Length: 230
Image 1 (cartoon, rainbow, N blue to C red):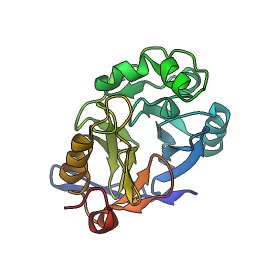
Image 2: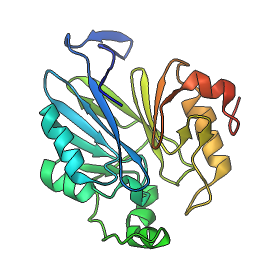
Image 3: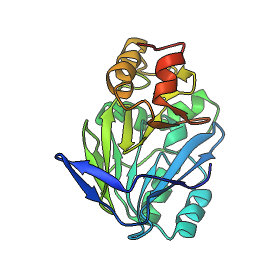
Image 4: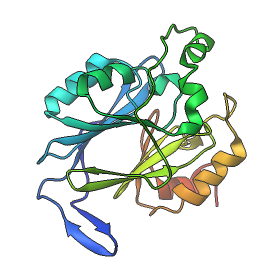
């Protein structure tokens, strides 16, 4: 998936604030053996950026950051399964950006080596993350606001990130599917509630960048997702 332009406006407290004439640029690319979708979102004017789910292949991630001339301000995680955090330590050391995770996924973060063994992959322990994610936590990238949605179910600490007409859904919602709930801390009732109460309340034209595989739209999933429907 190549760069896609975001909106030029954001609404805060009922006021529409115009951004620069250059829209945000998003590049999403699969990394690692399980094809985790890592996203780099960059403001072309300030070059400020947010990195979402650096799952593996730090050299690829570094190359994308360098090519975009991006200044990563935050490294955020939709959840702490090993395939979404594998390059976090290297990315943090190189960018000096804070890493953020919801604390309900602490047990997964602290047991990433165990997770790897389950999939016959050798991984080393991760250092502590920098800051906790929480529901409604916001991030400012060049004046554009990302908002955190707490969406437990795939894991106890799963989160999504909303930017105008796009939601970065991690492994909560997929095209025609939902995140598996048979791994550590998964709960189908919780993921169903998160999707219905949080994601399906977004505008139907909202683009969904999933944690794996192709993107979709909220309206499409509301109408046709066989696992969770209104």
